[in-house]
Image (tube, rainbow, N blue to C red; front, side, top):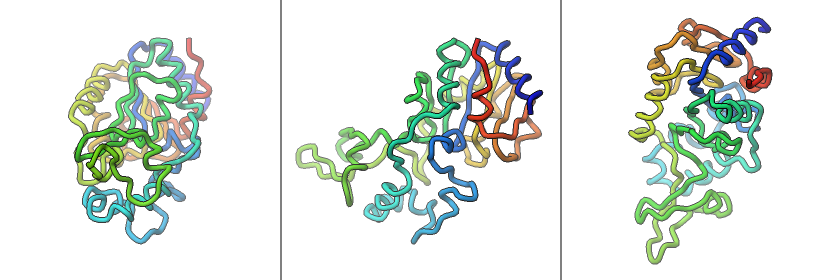
Length: 244
């Protein structure tokens, strides 16, 4: 792995338009479980499968059960940015990293200091009333019980998180900006993702350069398409990079 780290360092040194594309594995070192590992969210048992609970239909038909699950498993109190988040923010501050494209909804990239973050699946930190549009902080859900209701006048609509649920499409502007950033990049670092969630995983195919790096603690179906593969936790790898 040492030789691969040296190659990664050299490519970062040579690049000035890096884009990072990441998934749940980026936040596991912050104590947030990923969705598909052995101990991840999708391997635990609930009354309904997580894919069902986290669907738009389920949200509107059974909001009480949705929020019981959502508060328990989707809102992680006290999570802090880890070495990966901090290094990416450092690379952006140095003018080398131009954008983070993330599948995560935890806001940890911004908490670490990253400014240009395209959140493909939204954020648990933002919440709103679909009926009247009033916006709410995460505490409107995390610090309440039952079904959170809008308090804007006589609205009483159900507050919902600004996340993309199953059955819903990604935001068109976020798609456009993410693809454009990847297409223009002179280096693409893919980290902490199994690349099985579509359409997000297909975005990496818009990269046109010759420095496509894939960093993940397990193999992925796209390893053969990468110019450099490092099979290790993303935080462990990026913590060894020197920004200069």
